[in-house]
Length: 234
Image (cartoon, rainbow, N blue to C red; front, top):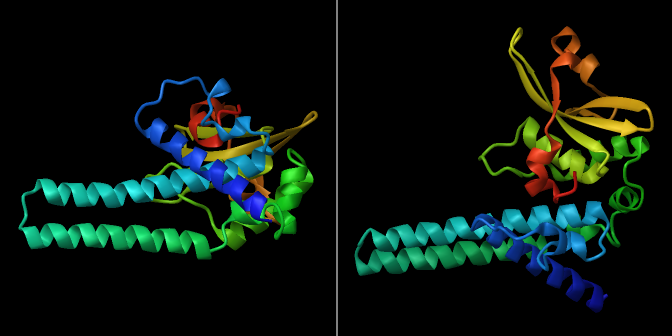
């Protein structure tokens, strides 16, 4: 158990470094990069969840440090500077403690959560679609594109990470009726399933949920545009 946790901790730290480099405008090639956790033999679903958690944690920490730095540069009084630094350290510590004591999807994949184990071991399978809705309902959906809100973009990105590389990120922009929406298209052999990731395990068809407003002729595959979030696998 200890060796497994140490290995996961090491990969998590690698993912944090990847987040930092990406934030600084990384120009490395992901294919052979030592900071790309997809190069360490993890199943794609597990690696995607680990990377998403690390990126979220990195940007939370960055916000705290940026706040403290802005206060210091504003030439406030010494007491205010000390207060801001202490606040930043407390907030960071609380965030770290919360991350340690709160079960995260990536932490639960290997041993404790059968649903996520099944998703990890059987990617790109339509029978997993209801399970993915269960995961999203149980743990929620993170703000993956970090725009301060959780909407169709985050739901689609999260669904794709859980499902596997055969799930495509689609945009439907219809100037005739104002439709501007991201969803997921699943390919399984010759079968195409257009999924509304904000639906439910029993009702997720784009055609059923959106009715005539959904016109497939306005669909566009944008998976490659989000490779920086979904792990470079497109």
